Image 1 (spheres, rainbow, N blue to C red):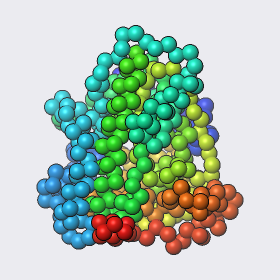
Image 2 (cartoon, helix red, strand yellow; image 1 turned 180 degrees about the vertical axis):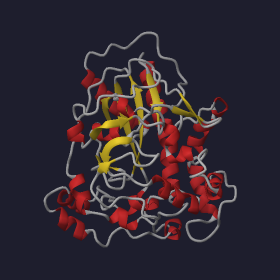
Image 3 (cartoon, rainbow, N blue to C red; image 1 turned 60 degrees about the horizontal axis):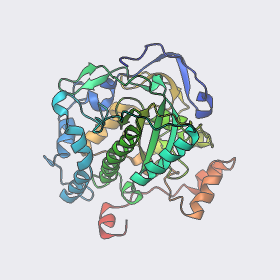
Length: 392
């Protein structure tokens, strides 16, 4: 499959339950326009600080300016990214930055004989079990939807647009969730906290490749994908893993916003999960903690609105949309990723504790204003030194 149609069907079954609203001017997104790709070719995004941001992941010119940004903080963060980096760089000479601007290459062939699947629901349950065996924290399945496939991917040799090919016949998308370490998340913004991001990218690279190999061993096609190939958030929401929030993240009942997501495109016969709206949008309607806390005011305060006002936004989806350039400018300035919006989110809790499960019930009910009031003193940054001392 090469470039998808420029005029896909707008609203589809299950969209309303997932909170997905697509307008008539919807246009598939070119990955060359995401802010991370633009930072490599667009002079309106790329600066000296941008170059320093990327260099810091190679321990080149890593700043040493206080708690959370010491050499050992950067050392841990970069070590956490190691496995993901190895997978990403292995076909760089062909212009493939795998897991980010291209899907992960298949290291095993599709078996010539297929395992017969007579019960797609049972097979979906089996895939979930195998995913958790390999280390995924969440796993659900939804149908393939060409609206979210990038209209083109990026050839990283010259940052030009390249065909975004998927094998024909992809019918399902397996969406995997990977929990980020809460103790590290609570230290954002810091290079130390970036280790929580890097660790999960390294974990998901291994998990998604292993699960895809399992499916190919059964005789079916499977394309392992991280940030590449298609937008993952619509798939996570459509699969019922969680709901989209003001902070641009998926809020899950198990881990709140504290997740990375990966996905597998496959033709394996699978039963599809359904969206499970619980009331996150109604809570976000009255909560602006993430927007209030954003240092560069990149997050919206108002209601969801049609996207597409800037180059790094998909056009024609009614949603909360961040200012990607403002957000990335802060990342570049501190030479590490930022997830203050994740840290301060009222849903960033340990839901293994009964008190937080009780709070969740309030937040997703008509008592949401009480839940927001109860959360008013939470979300303060933990000093990175406390994490190193074992008290974070």
